[in-house]
Length: 208
Image 1 (spheres, rainbow, N blue to C red):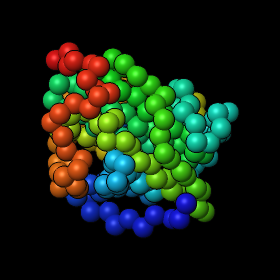
Image 2 (cartoon, one colour):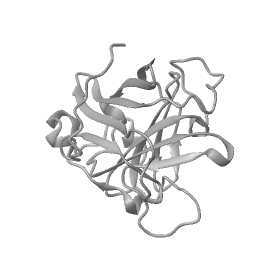
Image 3 (cartoon, rainbow, N blue to C red):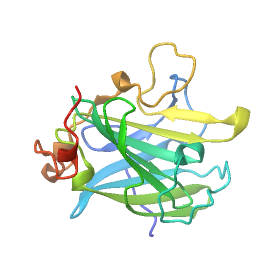
Image 4 (tube, helix red, strand yellow):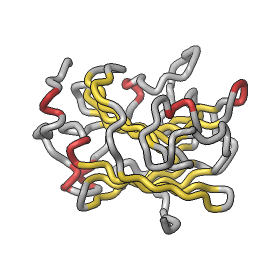
């Protein structure tokens, strides 16, 4: 894929974000991971430009395929949450693997390894990725958002968050939904907002 051109505005309403903190709210020591949300005829497009650490090594799963436990590798994750604890988790790896999960309630996964249109490319010291999330994957009434990045291995494993934990915790947990922040996808595109559950989400009545 061609290298993405992204102007980072640090505006949650504009759909452009930069991850500048670790999960526990310390500054990162490298160029920020940059994420842009935009509309695509098929759904929500996610573009990523991020430092390429090449640590840990690539998964054994072929590029373009869902990879179980992708969070154990180098990855950028985006979460789309509504006010009833229904949320979509999209994990993207610089080596081309992905993992898409639907969760109905905190940490209550109801579907995983959903197919995804995703391509990535290493460009010098960065990797660029572009994914298109089908409209049907988005829960109704998306109201909050968070994004995360992980790299490194063993003692050097690093966990970063767009909206970090603001209270003391002993370990990172990307499902602390209380730290997610409001997002207005309607300002990205009206096509990304719906109050009506898709056929996919209709299978899972809200638990909250």
